[in-house]
Image (tube, rainbow, N blue to C red):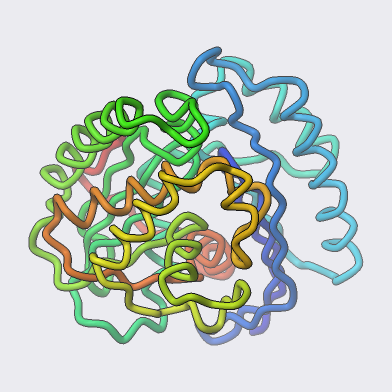
Length: 316
């Protein structure tokens, strides 16, 4: 049976839409959209979503709702992740989504976020298993270990927006700011790698915009090309070099890079630093970049019964 679904992933930095036809375990894209709304702006400091951030998200959702209606979608699921979990005024966000989209957002746990990311990332992947899948978001990073299915998962509160707001204040960041971010990230990464555990898997798979942008820069692409980025393998040395260059450049310099999204230029240094430290601490010589992630996992979940809850998985 063919089902047309709409999956929406609302994270700390971006909100994304995937409309797809799901049939016989296969996903056929109808439309993919992404808007940088920075919903989590200031949440690490204030503990609340700002009115301006909620309004930016509402404007993006208005466009998504119109496209969902136009394309005749059967089922809709919107998942909200790190920023919405952390915010004291999440009820205001939920009410806005209900009024704009007609469904409630699911403010999912870090465990569920990890599971959905893994499902989207490994579908169609031919690299050697088991996998360590890392989804570097704006406010959190998910670590998932598994082969055919998830075995262990954990979410930790490091992300490109959170690390930038917490540590990387100068333009470009100072050595002291970078050192503080490195110490913060390293502690969280070590905690995550012990919990999953993350030192034994054969393949590291990296998800989300920080990873795919680093991959595009390492490949010296003349423009952002999802087809070339998807399942590309990037060496640790290339990730380290790109990270060094990004942290040494201003936001204006980054905006001149042909693969850089305007809404990512101010936080990409923090995201690249997280990826580099994960590779260092996990002992990974390369990372496979995936364009398929939690958004694809949400889409698959709309056509299949939910999986059983795994024992022992938790959000740190």
